[in-house]
Length: 128
Image 1 (cartoon, rainbow, N blue to C red):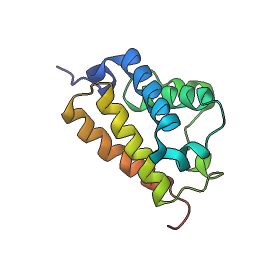
Image 2 (cartoon, rainbow, N blue to C red):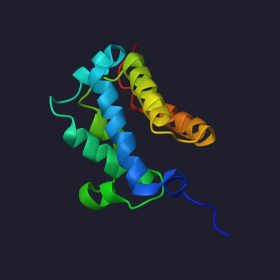
Image 3 (cartoon, helix red, strand yellow):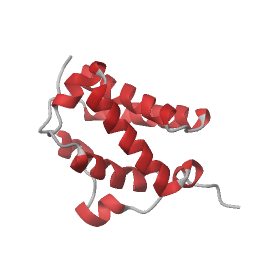
Image 4 (spheres, one colour):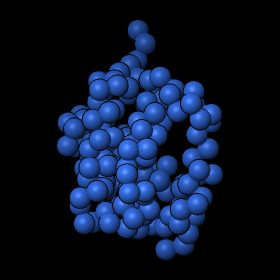
């Protein structure tokens, strides 16, 4: 029997959508994330949609981002933004809260948090 993808384990499209909605909600209102929020446009909808498309494929569901934009090239796409340790840590903390708020299983959260941290750390392009 095939092991389920993360996408299937967490509830597919609906849960990925809720996770992205909550992530950007938190980023928009929690003072702890103000520097991270300042890196984003006034409207977060485009960022939210891109994260949704990316996570869909990254979690093992439909590869929506690649279908629309090609290979994610995450580091290259994030180069215009000054990403330091503070930005990385704010992004990861915001995602950790979002995962908890939407009710992801603790074991899944631990695995994803580690993967999110490693990916966010790879995005760093500025000292400090």
